[in-house]
Amino acid sequence: MKSKVLVLIAVMLAAALFFAACQPAAPAAEEAAPAEEAAPAEEAAPAEEAAALSGQLQLAGSTTVQPLAEELAAEFMAANPEVSIDIQGGGSSVGVTSAGEGTVDIGNASREIKDSELEQFPNLQIFTIAYDGIAVIVNPGVELAAGLTKDQVQAIFAGEITNFSEVGGSDAPITVVSREEGSGTRGAFEELVMEYKDEAGEKQIKPIVESALLQQSNGQVMTVVSTTPNTIAYVSFGFLDDSVTAVAIDGIEPTVENVKNGTYAIFRPLNMLINGAPSELAQAFLDYILSDGQTLVAEDYITVE
Image 1 (cartoon, rainbow, N blue to C red):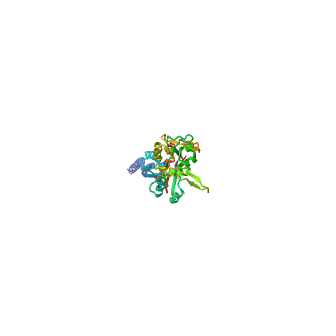
Image 2 (image 1 turned 180 degrees about the vertical axis):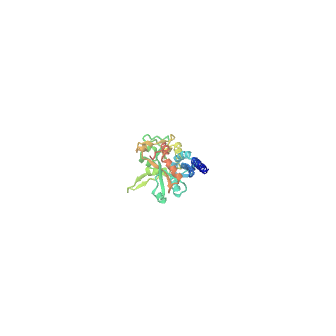
Image 3 (image 1 turned 90 degrees about the vertical axis):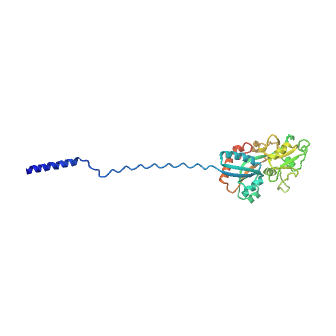
């Protein structure tokens, strides 16, 4: 009996061990949850496009530069609708003074800037945007088949020659038409045509005859000469048309091509002036003029390229 009990106990122990061995082993620890994938970094936002230009520019000065500046401004404003550019005349001296005193953003001058002006406004910056020839013109009724020499032109505007018959024309008194004092066109004409050297070899300017009919713009000069018999004047190349006759000087016709090839010597720079550092908008306008704007310049003037 005792031996049967021992056998039974042994069988029970063996069964217990068997069942224990059959149970799956519990994991020592929960498997670590897979690491969450890092959220992809947000793509950097593309750099903001350059802010569109906006604002207003005021220009004043040379009536020679004015129509060119207006055409350039129209193209610039078409490309930059938030920009407004207002352009007034007044003459080159007004352009220099207005820029120097800061009453305009940009001054226009159709001549070299005088040393005295640079002394008065030492921070004045000069940007040459084009070159422009100056043509001597007469009323279409005046016949000068051989043209004029530079010396003859000087003598006519100084009042020393008073009849067209003295220079190969018909017997008719000469009426001189000129720009007003302070005009860049007049200043350049005086420098390029009316200058002479005195007995001491010093440069002097012969004054334009007092009886000259003074006009406030190139446009007014064109109107007077085209409608008044026996008149003579000088005007920017940019204003020439068939209503007047342009005169050859020393046998050279007043054309852009002849300025470029160096045979026609009566030309001057067209300048824009800023006192100190340009504003962002003014600089952008100047950058346009000196790059893409030169295509427009080339239509009637001489480019700076």
